[in-house]
Image 1: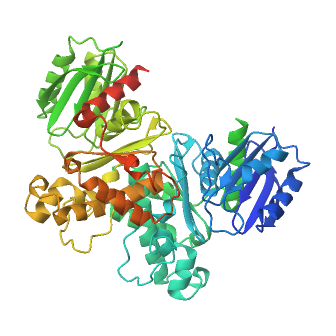
Image 2 (image 1 turned 120 degrees about the horizontal axis):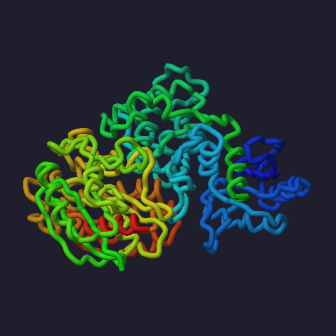
Image 3 (image 1 turned 90 degrees about the vertical axis):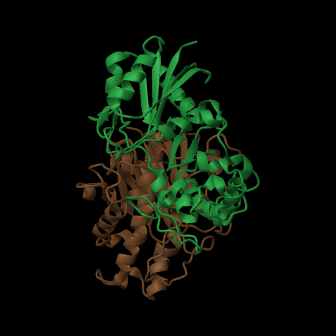
Length: 291
Length: 291
């Protein structure tokens, strides 16, 4: 069994760990995300005696995951101080001469669920996280979804809920999906963190309105075989039945597939890998690099 | 050079033809779409002496293009009389024992543009047709986009234009993209066919508003390397610059890629295969079957 190295590169912390090809995490550690110099030094020190045979990095973005591109391996135009145009993979390669896969944290999480989690045995799946931001990644035809670049599904436009007068907080688009449905939007709209609102609070019906609309676009455009919803906001488990019902209402029977009709509770699910989704995703990227 | 057989199975007519692996169409004929029995008899008669080595069918939908599925090769839940649950590929297989690929007309058109047209040499592209309906297909990572089923991108929800009071004509969703932006919506909204409205008519700014929104979702969700826009409505070439500008305004610099910034006139283009997009798409499906 090979030893795999996983790096979940987040905007507030880096989680590093080792694991194996069956998705077991053997060891983990985390560091705050400060400057590239400081944080990467800790990452490199951690892996220096681990003898990993491959590395996977699931990163905050935007990044360049396109192999062969001039800026492959870079975190690109992030507003996060010190990290814009940083060659993360280049830095790792200076120290570890092993196969490496670099992708977004959400593409990694989608691959993790596809490899070891809720979407095992399928050909495609979508993973969406709803937390401080909204992001999604996907596996299509057994492969990570790329094109021009990686997806940025959290920023699609949605129709407003009729009772919603919150302006939206996305600095680029104002009231796009992320601007209306990420954790900070809930907090700012109701002057209370989501975790402090009761399960019957009208916030959740509104939240489900936005997320179901997004899922409708994802279903009609990508046709994933499974949708996995994670992130802090999705800890509010009352959202799942609300979202499923609203998605069915919006689609109105147009897509005649049992996954969207009777069996929808099997179609829209929480992550099987639970709170390990991020690190397991990075591990799945390492597993892909090894192959 | 192999002889390939192509069938563009449309809701009003079937276009059949032969061609080769370089995308050249050698011969073509068309029949009105009446009943499966009548129409397919003509199709079978046409190909009976053509000695084709592979067949490609790009069809109106919804269809089942998933190889291995119980209803693979069927036109499924179409409202078109006589054609619901019709096993089109099964019928062809009774007469022609050659490799066959079956997909939506728009997935076929996307593959045609990818193989011989505007997206040659790329890894992904999206083809959208705006005509009596709105539909889109895509190639992702060199392969036709499938998942649960085929995409149904024409039915995503869009935000209304502030001056638009037309209810939308989609029988499933009312004012989804197709309901607001397909040819019949233009006709009903302005009481005149699009072809009779001048190029400066406000209809086109409104049309571009809807199509640019759809493109924004396609870009953020699929990240295609090229977008090809065809169909009757897109003959109004004034739409192209309007759509490009509105897409840039909506994205607001969020996706930092030269294709979406300076070079956008190379990113959103008319079909290189022109009015042959449908038959060429079916030919590309036959070419894929041969491989």
